[in-house]
Amino acid sequence: MRDYFIKTVRIGFSKWNNDDINLASQLWGEEEVTRFICSTGKFTQEEIENRLNTEIRNHELYHIQYWPIFERSTDELIGCCGIRPYKSEKHFYELGFHLRKKYWGQGYAAEAANAVIDYSFHILNAKKLYAGHHPENKASEKLLKKLGFQSIGKEFYLPTGLYHPLYEMVKR
Image (cartoon, rainbow, N blue to C red; front, top):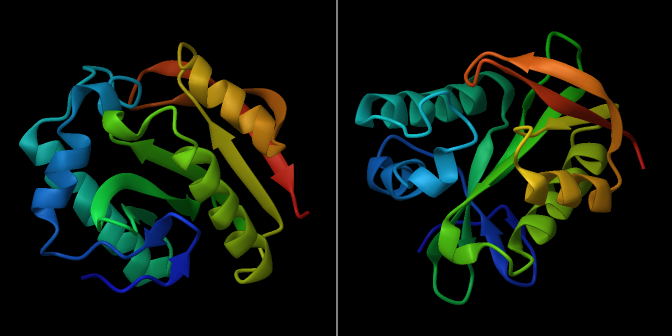
């Protein structure tokens, strides 16, 4: 049983730690999850470990990460959802979420993202949130608009080598 520092009706938010390599592999080892977040479409084991270490480091440095999220009724890993610093601006964050395929289309991404948005603005005093998505990821585009993000252009995303649509949300 993990400790949850944010809870919604169905989701518990935890924090990545050094013992979570198996969970990280469940998530970022799924090609359906990574096909839009890296140029090869699939993470190697080394890339999974690096991603986990990045999330742990973000917690150590900034007290934020793309937190692992769990289905509260089963304690099963859904994926991750959270924030990371956006560029060098203080109180500006980038929202992101990665869900295991079996949890797609069930409202988990919206539920988790709304919880992170509220946490970011009300607990962390975020001034702005940014988000982006792979140009071909229409589900993420639809969700970001539904959440209230406004399109502000495109931004180059090095891991895919593409310009991704960029969105912004001011404190609500």
